[in-house]
Amino acid sequence: MDFWRRINIIYGVMQGNKLSRAFYERATLEVARDLLGKFLVHGTGEGPRVGRIVETEAYVGPDDRASHASRGKTNRTALMFGPPGYAYVYLIYGMYHCFNVVTETEGYPAAVLIRALEPILARDQARMRDGKNRLEKLASGPGKLCRYLQIDRQLNGVDLCGSVLYIEDRGRRIQPEAIVAAKRIGIDYAGEWKEKLWRFYVGSSPSVSQR
DNA sequence: CAAGAGATCATCT
DNA sequence: GATGATCTCTTGA
Image 1 (cartoon, helix red, strand yellow):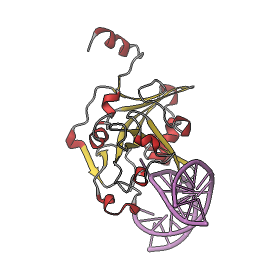
Image 2 (cartoon, chains in turn yellow, brown, orange):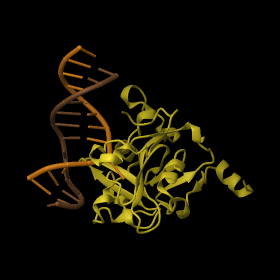
Image 3 (cartoon, helix red, strand yellow):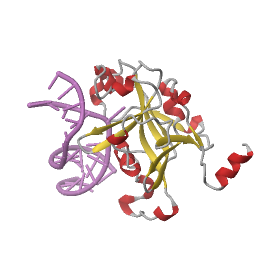
Image 4 (cartoon, helix red, strand yellow):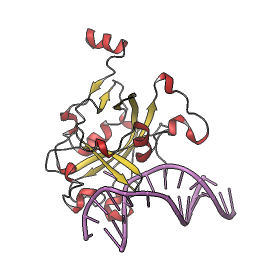
């Protein structure tokens, strides 16, 4: 680590390495695994909101029946067909948002759904405990993490290589054997595709979503 | 603890 | 007009 980077981290100016376009422009299953342990950052007006990614799901290609893209390119899904490294945010059940990162090369529809975060709270936010509002469960699901990070459709299409919403590497690796692969959640309509073990999570994390 | 229902609306048929 | 890449609350054992 070079001198200025060390100084920046000591003073909190810089927290880590923002992931580049090249990170996202890879096989979706690899991106989904590699996103575990990375930090999702949303710079809101009231300061940055941050969480450590502990659960993801891959949606891969035009034939994956679980993927929105399997019904072809529409207004909503056009982003999934676009270049990698952009946010795909949609409203689900009329009241929750889901946040995805677009992956692979332009023209091939694929994305990773971010399903759970461990909240990283600033010092003055470190209240909220007790009962069902356990801190570690604050962002333990795709809808809950969007509520926690204040992500909504206004951020649909945002460039994750920009400075509003991005993902960074803060240096610590997740060991491959600590990662669990499982079936994806909430896609019973997807036929044989629902059997794919395309959900990944950090087995030891208390913030993984239920079921 | 598990199972079930209801909330609520953009998107696509 | 139907439906969902969800969450929370209620009921009952």
